[in-house]
Length: 305
Image (cartoon, rainbow, N blue to C red; front, side):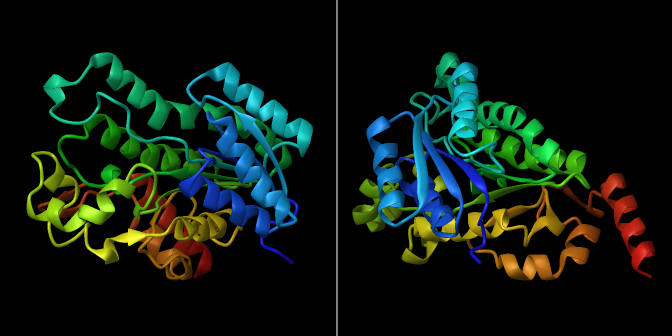
């Protein structure tokens, strides 16, 4: 049996790149998939590719920053295939006016960036969650970024949004523990896409002579090397693993394209006990502990001893 047989998935930002790759893989694994984005032509193409391969798919144009549009997306999904059991919050990206020096950014652009890269995922999750809880089954997968794990200048609204996505995923997972719904965040790494394609042919010269803000985002000798990039299919592989139920023991954790997701799950007890793959504050005295996680780990240890 395919990994996602019987599931109903909604994938935002599914017109191209990472979102399309996830949608194609989900359909291949047996899920009925609703693909959504603002570009009707692109999502219709994604849906056509799925149907041509024998899968089930429908396309619905939506603006994830508009609540009425998001509700219409979920209503459409329920009518077509049933209530969604998998939600992939993938839509997002750069917003004009939100890169460069913070003091020069357009305040309204900052709000647009936060809405697209953080608030939209929170809203869509809020609207999709009740049906999952009623069914006692669901997976919410939020596409984050390495920019949410480390501090870097010149991308403040984007980085803050992705940090929020990671923390939102963890906090919601704690609320949902024992209720049948798992939540994850993950970064696909640097992926060749419409946004990054122009950089690929000139990556060596960009690394050697970066503009002011570029060297922080792609440090010379690291991110612009070939090994720092991943195909969108790697993101699809990760998203499928997280949606399959195999990782539910580490719900709330952050994953990345270069992590071994199977090993993380294999060491789920240690991951929980040591608070790994989560946003924490290292101090001079070690990692700032979480009382909640510490107590939870102790209870788990007592239960298995």
